[in-house]
Length: 236
Ligand SMILES: Nc1nc2c(ncn2[C@@H]2O[C@H](COP(=O)(O)OP(=O)(O)OP(=O)(O)O)[C@@H](O)[C@H]2O)c(=O)[nH]1
Image 1 (cartoon, helix red, strand yellow):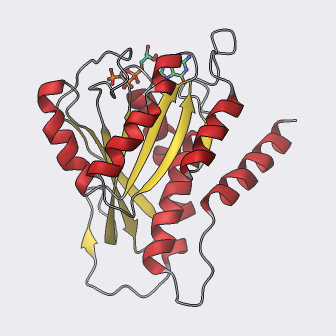
Image 2 (cartoon, helix red, strand yellow):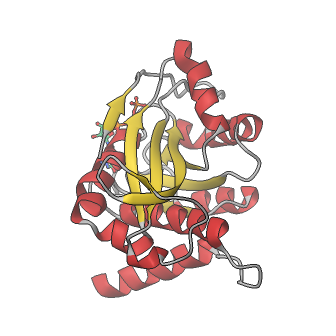
């Protein structure tokens, strides 16, 4: 797996405008050899950096205010699910990850990335009210620059910080409902829902691409809710 750093910067989270924070992109590649992708591919397979065959490529970006935990979430995902191999065997998708421009002067680069992103993981920090308030502005920007059918998932990160929490889970759920996007809380620190966030998005993208005409639509929020129920049963 490769991880390139293009540029990175800090931004204020006080402004109602989205702060000029970094977007994190990940290129997802459906590995033809993986069990869950045992479908007929339309074109000749290509070979990924990790030496696996793939036929479709997805681009996923992590966006949100500076300091919400985008890099940490990626690092957690990369070091956990990806390296353990479970992600590839679950959804048949390989991820290549790199950081993109963060500072205001690189903003046009980030906008350019939006245009061909297949999915956006939009993060706020549950200990930072401003990062939550800025989500509306982020969504406006996404509607302006991203493809119409981009998959967007809202993530309330740092859910482990119980003492410092200022944004309730219900507020995240309400906002997500208002905008019709799936939602979950995550923790890059504890690993809570990190793999699930990436897996759910990857499943949605894969399903959209390979769905048979009479197959029912993949219900992303239903999948997330079910997986979270299963995980909480296992914990108790
Ligand atoms: N408690 C806790 N801290 C976290 C979590 N995720 C990130 N952090 C901390 O939050 C700070 C910012 O994390 P980053 O991953 O650098 O945030 P970012 O969104 O990439 O920030 P920019 O690069 O400025 O855009 C660091 O001090 C992390 O240790 C989390 O899930 N829980």
